[in-house]
Image (cartoon, rainbow, N blue to C red; front, side, top):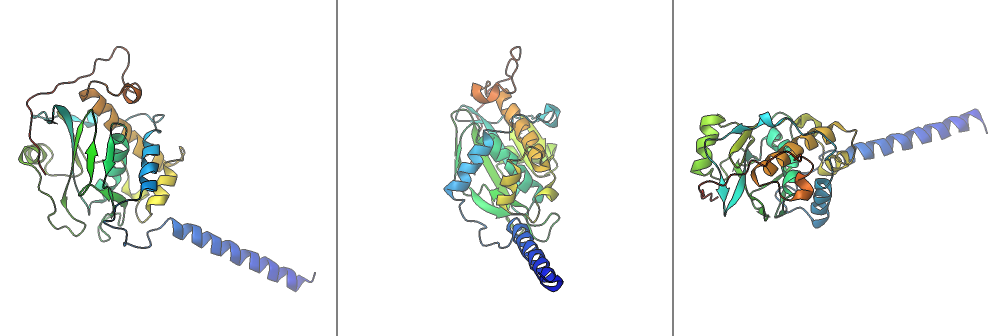
Length: 263
């Protein structure tokens, strides 16, 4: 084999490596917005369920991230979990991953749709989901996902008066805003920059990798939400709450006056 032929072979190999690398890189990046607003397929939903069954190895964030609300939110005799966010918001986008993982430990969703945060805001095109047309069922809790603005910053869903009272007076209308029974939390501990301009497949792959920063941050937040739900629902189901409730720990359950929450 001549040196010239060897150089051609090496050059061809390098070109193939570059092409493969570009394809792999591109496969993790946002390439289209055509999926926005479309219902996620069953295979993706099943992957989310699978993700909800793992991640308990990550220590939950401290419960002091949640503060005591002046109102106790419940519905149909069950503690209410309430999310107030906006489709354009990258911080909400990141938080939804953790919230959905946590909620799937207690019940089931239908109608989740693809969403990207705004392309013109910080951390553009953060892959996420929207709760606009989603429904949730659980024997332990109720869930209300409120998207008060769409991806174009236009009004979308009304925030119920009771929720707006706590949100405005105790959270300064900041988002994401989460209420769990009579606890509330503002903001997220997840860095949206880890997800920005990637696609849903990339995030799910990272959530299967315990060494990934995405895995660590999303599951730390998901486990905090899970622990707080266990505090207000009496530690049920045991298969979930046993990861957080010690033998000497008495769940802090209290169902007060029933509050009507209508979207």
